[in-house]
Length: 68
Image 1: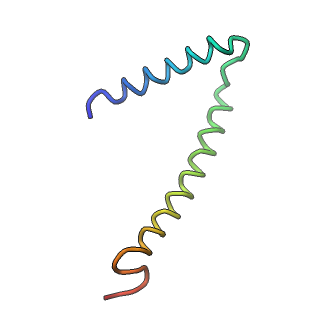
Image 2: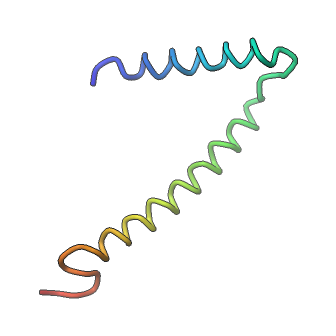
């Protein structure tokens, strides 16, 4: 999985360039707006990950809180 950071960076820069072509009048977000969006994303991701882990654990051969 070598070079994945370069691919992600190039894809991000390409999306920004395409966005500026179609919406030239819009300004790029400031750092505080980006940080707020990242914080919200991680909060949602964390909640989904916890719920997913509990759901997956509950459907395994040994359900949660039970010992064989």
